Image (cartoon, rainbow, N blue to C red):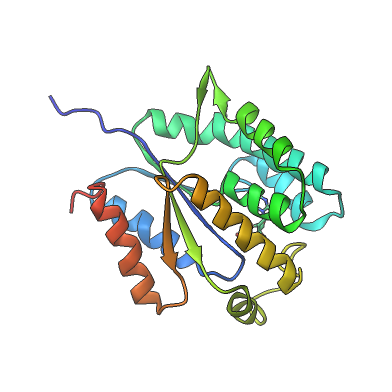
Length: 214
Ligand code: TMP
């Protein structure tokens, strides 16, 4: 009998403009080509409720605690109704941002209290007594100044994209802190390289874990 496949939870992280988007789709395609079912999703968002919360977080003025509560509320709904059911049915869940983004943007960028964020993380991500987090986090590392240049002509900036270089320096430092705290979960991708070279780094990480059948 064919053995049931274990679900895999992979998140993508990085400052705005680091170039995650095209690679997220390409990784989903690579898993599908190797015969895996894939759920491609994002945060804040991924459910009808969480997408409504996303619009508020990205567009409406609010303080850092409100922002943190809304992204964690969205995360709870997303985790319970999309991520966990998909993992339990053996799928690969690829998520554009997860809790590291909260530590980076609210904790780093907005300088919101990390102890409170840690409490919210434990609370929101514990389901039936089990703490859930990504199996792997692909962190796209890019100098905030280069990321800002890439973003200039890209689109109308939201509440985060319009922040200063200093804000993104703090976001970057906070990602670095999270990566150092969980080296077994984080893989750093040098996002300053060409699209092809970035993809090679990324797919090598996945192959080294023997997660692809091809
Ligand atoms: P995106 O444009 O990459 O989809 O991300 C939406 C924005 O939301 C991005 O600027 C980062 C921000 N964000 C937070 O501030 N906190 C969070 O917890 C998440 C998931 C995203």
